[in-house]
Amino acid sequence: MESHKPSTSKDDLILNIISRKIKQLPESDRNLLEYGSAYIGLNAAFGGLIANSLFRRILNVTQARLASSLPMAVIPFLTANLSYQSLVSLPLSTGDLNCETCTTTRGALVGLVMGGLYPILLAIPVNGGLAARYESSPLPQRGNIFNYWITVSKPVFRKMLFPTLLQTVFASYLGSRQYKLLIKALQLPEPDLEIH
Image 1 (tube, rainbow, N blue to C red):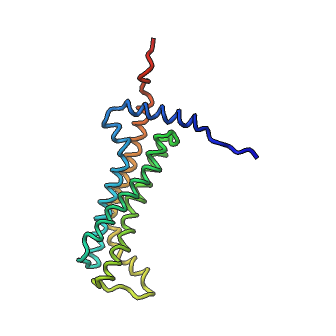
Image 2: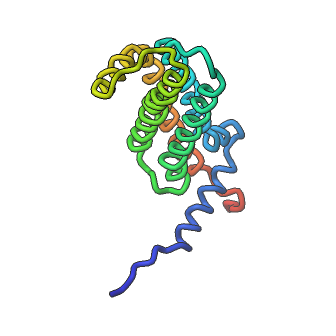
């Protein structure tokens, strides 16, 4: 049976051409291409802090502010940043993603799931554990756990609807903008070639 090996020299050539073209862009455009995922991560971190604050108020948790705020900022930042980078920025920069609609959709999905919903869902066990530890709120018995957390989470999800939609739209816009910048970079002439 013949094994199919991908052409690494062709892939390296494509990556080399794309990276040379990106280096020709103005610095502001290059920064958006290179650090766009960090913007998504920062928005996710803010969403995590907002969700953390809302759950702390509902569960009357007043202790351990730093213990709950730090993971609620760092973990969503890292997951959203890495997800956007691996699902949108990297495939776009390597030439594996060459459709504006696909880029926009991937960006929106990363923004929605990793930047919007994940921080809210992460805030539930963090603040639930603190509420149980400090006994700040009556927690349910074994049979009611699922219904209790649904009831507690509904107002948080309602209040987080706008930040989640904002994150989704921003990530979608960023994906579209990065695609357009990459197309702009690919249309630039090679700096080494002189036309005679």
